[in-house]
Length: 179
Image (tube, rainbow, N blue to C red; front, top):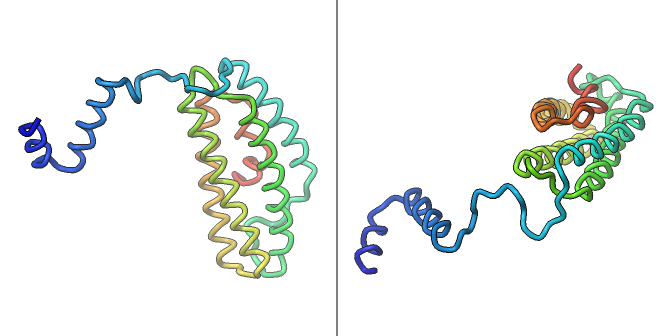
């Protein structure tokens, strides 16, 4: 064991982490190749997509009724409208995301589903930042956050399409942001 410890000490940090991970996988089976999560409710991917798309369609109908302000806001007087629009989007998106998460974990596709949902979390947080800056009349910050939201939305749309959604990530606020 002393020889092994001595050799590990001479290896770089990345190599040591890789070696430790490999040893863990070999000895106790942690991080194995299974795509199925432990101790979580699972749902077949096709069923998950169908149910999630139904939830997204419902949320999109609410979004489509909202008046869309000029985006990105060009003048300070447009900031209140932008704040109201994104505050509502945050509420709708947060509710939709919580309901989708309650469906369970899609199998197969757990990693892709997680990446998609994590990206939506980031999108909602970025929309909250727009509300924050717009309410404080920070026109430049609001515009900068809007560009960030557009980029995140584009990524979310790409992930949603690759995962197999027909509605989620491809309509509603995503359509507004991609114009």
